[in-house]
Image (cartoon, rainbow, N blue to C red; front, side):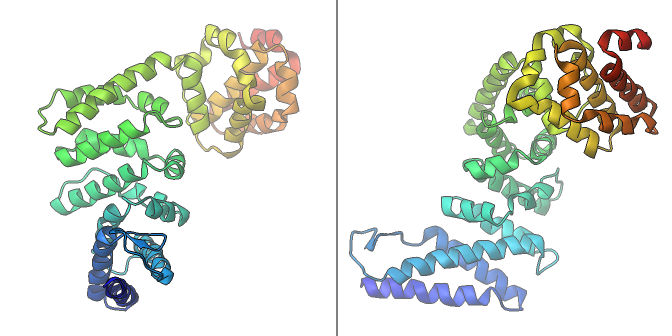
Length: 359
């Protein structure tokens, strides 16, 4: 009996997987849906033993099933990159992934194929029934990935939080709101997500959602826990944490802390962390950013470091900042030019004399 069970699964795997690569989209769609369904309910094999305890020596069956699963995930990811059908391929692939990503091995394969980034563009407010379903299943994939550390690490480098926030602000579909809020709850304590959520004003969004009528108890519980978590984050998040988060994201603006003497006096030694990581990132912004505000603020912050740190001029000079800042003294934007000049003056003349010239 065991032989026929295993042999039957192998036959199904073999033919359905082969049909994935046919040139006919109808056959491809039916094959991937069939394989996804089979994989989600297939018997589990553990070291030569069936789930009912019956022994088997057909080790090739394990490899076959694992290989088919890996190949199926790769095929689904290829549909997100280069769809075989202009309208059906992406929704079908997302639908199948929303089923398969419940397995940790599939999450690992999905991350290994560098496919997490393919989900991000699909997360945007939707209006039609078809687009709402695609949005829901995409968010469901992200929620499932939020349980996998490697995927969370990758998500931290994307702009996925603002997209999710826009979706949850504009959606009236309870299932969409629920899966996004559950994702936020999972990510809140991971990496720098908590600070990003605070900066996005997510607490106000949560409070607004709580004022609405929802029938889903899981959603109501998740909203309450997310509210508590965000309030705790706000209490713990110091001004330097917020500043550091903005710098690491490369998104600088003229928030009050930049020109607050108390901020610089209280936090100047924090800039020494990780071998002056923040200063190095500020210099990277000078090298790579095309945003005039970010360039101006970066120059200003370097000049503030020179002014308030006892060894500011030496540290900034050792990081070879002079040449990079001087290039910006001829920038087309007057604000960039002004702050680049201030930074150079403090490098050459010292903080007090440069401040005198600026007054």
